[in-house]
Length: 276
Image (cartoon, rainbow, N blue to C red; front, side, top):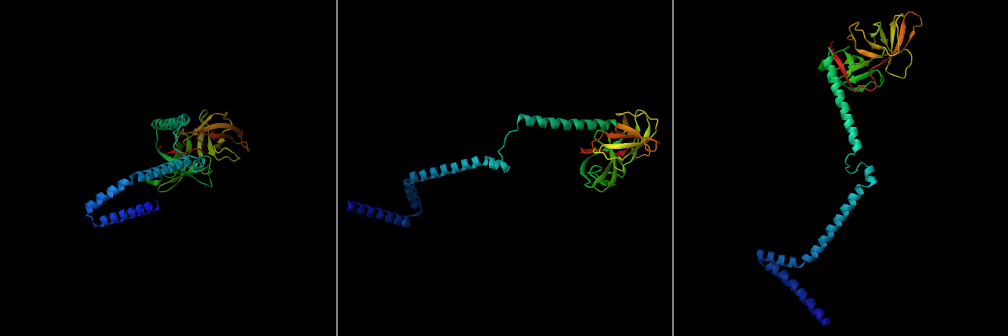
């Protein structure tokens, strides 16, 4: 038996040496055919090895995809793509409808007013005077000038241009000490002056109307508009509504608190009146 295995081993070694010799002396074409024949003998083994490798790679990809959808990866901002829910679509539609309505109202209002205006975006606020100054995205390059009136997209008084740069401008808002102007009670036509509140108010929309005659009848809810005196603002721009009133300390005139129509903390777009 040992002699049989010894002879088999010698035969295998001889076959390998003969194959090597033939590969060296054969022409290129014959050598290629011999390589193909030898490779065919080992295809089953190679196929098994390749199949195993593909299976391992598939398992690795499956593990990677599973870990990518794990809470840890979601916490890192790698959440899988999830289609929007019906509630999300309703919210997006509501926001879109609101923007469309605002755009339509602004266009309708622009066609109704007798003044020329430019619609501008609010791009900043004064950090030292947050409630009283805003920055807009147009300047002298687009015809913005000092002291031009500024109104909201709905046509309510906001303030006036206080500084003009080449590309941007600053607007001082109603209620700032530097934005005084003449106004009147729309119902009685009694005239006075809008000034900044002399008493503390937690609402930045509250201003004071002073120098009204003592015989004026004031009631909460009465409308206040610009008077047009002085030429700084055109006449009849809506300002706000009367909150309450009192007689001045010296008894010479009547004063009132007025709440502005324009919400000064929610200004995103405003209009600069360029010709009025």
